[in-house]
Structures are given as C-alpha cells and as structure tokens.
Image (cartoon, rainbow, N blue to C red; front, side, top):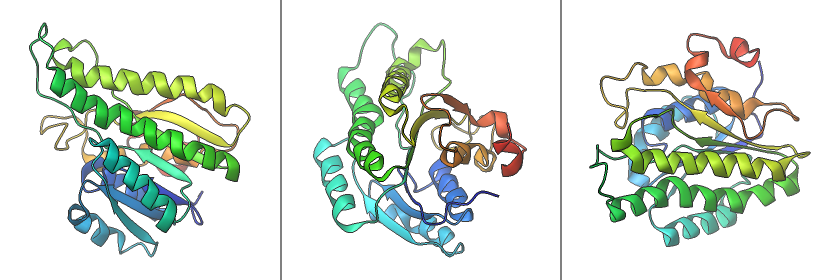
Length: 239
C-alpha cells in the first residue's frame, strides 16, 4: 500500500466532518498534518483523534472570509511550519435557499471570499514553492450541485473553483505538481444535512486518491468520491 511518510498535508476546515476524515486518512498512511480551523480551540477533537496514529500534527487558525487573516496564516505557515507537500482546500460555506431573482450581494461576497478567493490565494502562494521542490498535490473541493437555482450563490462559487483549477492545470504540465478537483457527494455533515445519502465515513478511500497520484497523473480532472465507496484503498487506486 502506498504511504505518505515524509509528506506534510494542510487540510482546511479540519475541525469536523469531511475535513476530519481527510486528516484521519492521511494519518493512516503515515503523513504529517497541519490541520486548520477558524479558531484553534475548534481543533481539539480532531487533534485527539489523530493522536492515535503516531504522526506529527500541527494546528493553525485562519478566518478564510477575511483576506488579512488568510495572508497572516500563510505567513505563519511559511515561518513556523514544515514545507507543505499536499493541500486539501476542503473548507467552504453554503447558504439556505435564496430568492432566485434577488441577489444578496453581501452573502455572495462572503461565499466567494471563503470558497474561491481564499482558495486561490492559498494555491497561488504554495504552487510555486511546490514546483521549486519538485512535488505537490492540491485537491480543491467542488460540488455536484446542479439545476438548483435557489442555491446559486454556493453553486457559482464552486463553478469558479472548477474553472480556476482546470485553467491552472495548463501551467503545471510537465511538473510533478498535480492540482485536481474532488466532489464528496451528498454527505451527512453539518452542511449536507441529515437526509444525505452518504455517511461521513464513506468518504474514505475516495478523498485520499488524488493525494496518492503518481507523477504524470491526472491534473485539472474531477474525482468523485461516491465512485470509490465500499472499496479498499488498493482497489480505489486501481480504478
């Protein structure tokens, strides 16, 4: 089985739900972790769970809705944390159904700041560093949401993430820095709700597959977690 020993992974939004499951999957494969939340105190339970895996776990806080906070977080990562090899841009916010013909500009700005602008800022900062070191894996979370105009503020933000990731992939051709999209499916989390079709534990092994790609693997492509539900990691990597 492939492992991630010697690699450090940053997971945004790691205080609960899918972010915590990503961190557990990385730790299971021996990878060190930098877990992120808006406040350090929110990471206590995730840190406790990861203590069982024998890997190094670092914590960092940052308000992804505040550009100054994002920039401060990045400076702190550069100064006091190990070099980052893998990034999961997992953190995001959604919205309740909106009036289709009335744009709530303040809500739209907030969603775009968290889901798009902070993601781009993080990627644009760390991609050159990964290229210099000759390795990197970036996994940007998107959504399969479709034909639901009442949720357009959220859907538009994820469409922007798709476009950014696919276009930036052109710059990564010929390098061992791979940036891909991942959709987790409809998962029973705080965002997904109680009626979702997948349990949070079902995201493994699918969420880990893009982090384990070999050099020359897909870049700018979409990975769909539901495709891997019920498989072992070895089976998932063979698809």
